[in-house]
Length: 351
Length: 281
Ligand SMILES: Nc1ncnc2c1ncn2[C@@H]1O[C@H](COP(=O)(O)OP(=O)(O)OP(=O)(O)O)[C@@H](O)[C@H]1O
Ligand SMILES: [Mg+2]
Image (cartoon, rainbow over all chains, first blue to last red; front, side, top):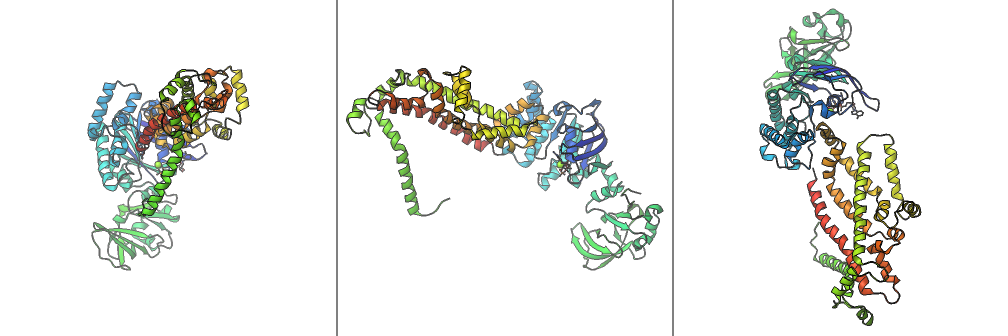
C-alpha cells in the first residue's frame, strides 16, 4: 500500500526530445490507474520514469513520503510487468520468481514459502520447475505477474501486459488481474491501448496526448463528460461524431437544441460532439439532421450506419440497436437528447 | 534435403569415402609408425600395420627427455595444456568483460573503445611480434607461463562475437534485473553468463585450438628446454637430431599432440549442442 505523487514531471531524452511536458498526478492507496493514449504519446516513458528505468529530467516523484527521483529501481520498491514478459530464459519459473527475493537476502526458506504462496494464488504450482520456453503465452504472462507479486511491492507497473495474448485469453486475464489487484490492494499503474481493458480495469483513467495529461477521472465520467475534444474522440468505440459548426451555414446550428448552447463559442468554429450510440431515429421535425446512408455494417447486436448529412463535412456514424435492414442510399432523420450533446470551443475544450 | 537419385547417392558416398581415406591415411601411418623401432623404419618400406614396439616408444617419449628437444613429452604436454587453457580462459574472460562494457554501459569514448578493439583484428601476433617480445623481455617474463599466455590473450574476434550476442539480448531483461535488484555484476554473473553458455563453449574450442597450435610465439620466448611446447617440439624433433630422424618418436609425439584438442572438441561439443537447443526463446 502506498501513494504515488507526480509533480510537474518532465522527461527529455538525451537526443533532446521532450517526451513528458510536466505530468501532475496523485494516486491514492490501492488505486488502479490506467493510462491510455495514442501511440508515441509517452505512456511507456512515464511508466519507466516512475520505475526508475529512465531518469527524470525535472519535477518530483514521491512514493509515500519519500522523494525517489534519484533512487535505483530496486530501492523504489516497485515491480514491473513488461509487455514481452522479460522472463529470465535460463531459469525455472521458481527461480524467476525467487530471484528478486534472493537479491534482497531473504532467507531461503522464507523465499520458498513466498514463491509457493504466490504460485498457488496464480495457479502456477504445477509449472514451478519449467523453463519459460516450455510455457504458453498465457502462462508466461502469469509468471511475469507472479514475479511482480511475490515481492509485495508498494506499486505495480504494467506496460501493456496483455497485448501479446489472443483475444479470449486477454478477456480472461483482464478479469483475473482486476480481481488479483483488488485482493492484494496494491497501488497499480497500468498502461494499455485497449479501450475495453482501460474502461473495465480502471478506478481512474488517465488520457494522455503528446506528453500531456488530457483528463483524469473515472472511466464513465470520461465517457459522459469528456473535458476535451481529444478525450471525446479517444474514449468510446466507434468514436464520437465531431461536427464543426460554422454558425452561419450549417442548418444544424439553427436547431433549438444547438441554438440554446452558450452563445460565445458559436461565433467561432466550435464543435458539436454526439456519440454514435446516442443518435436515434426521430421524426423530421425534431431531427438534428437527415442522414444519407452510405454504408451499413450489421454486427448482430447492433448496426453501424455510416453516411453524410447536408451542410456537414464530417462523416457521421450511427449505432442502432438490433438489426436494421437498411438500404444503402436510404435516408434517416436523426436526433439526440440534450444531455448527450457535447460542445467544444475552438481550442477543443468543453463548454 | 533428399533427392531420390541412386546414382547421386553412390557417387557422393564414393567421394566421401575417398575424402575420409585421404584425411585418415596420414593418421594411420603415424599410428603404425609409432609402434615400430627405428631400425625397422629405416630398413623396410613404410609399414602399414602395427609393430611390437608401441608401448616402449610411448613410454620412452613420455618419461625420458627426448633427444634434440631436451624435455619429456609429459612436460611438453603440460606446458601446452597450461598455455592453451590460459589463453582460452583469458580470452573469454577479457573479451566478455570488454563486450559487456561496450554494450551495456554508456561512457564517454564508448564507440572509440569499440573501434580500437575492432582495429586490432587487423594486427595478428606475427605483425607485432618484435615489440611484444621487447615488452615481455623487459617484464622478465621470458621462459614463463605468463609470458606465453598474456600477449596472446586479448582477442578482438571474441570481443566482437560477444558484442553481437549481447546486442541480441532484449533490453527488457536488463531492466527486469534492475527492478529485481541485480547490480551490474549480478546481471553479468546470474543472467548474461548462463545465457552465453553456447557462445562460450564454441569460443572455448576455437581459442583452445588457437592456443594449442601456437608455434612462433612460444618458440621465440622459450629459450629453456623445460618450457618447450608440444607443437614447437615436433619441428625440433624432426629436424634437429644429429643423424637419422627418430620417426617412431616423432609420430608418437604427433599422436600425443592430437589427443587434447580431440578431447576438448568431444567434451565441448556436447555443451554447445545442448546450449543451442536450450537457449532458443
Ligand atoms: N530512448 C529514447 N530516446 C529518444 N526518444 C525516445 C526514446 N524512447 C522513446 N522516445 C520517444 O518518446 C515518445 C514516447 O515514447 P513512448 O515509448 O513513451 O510511447 P508510448 O506512448 O508508450 O507508445 P506505444 O503505445 O506505441 O507504446 C516517442 O515519440 C518516442 O519516439
Ligand atoms: Mg509503450
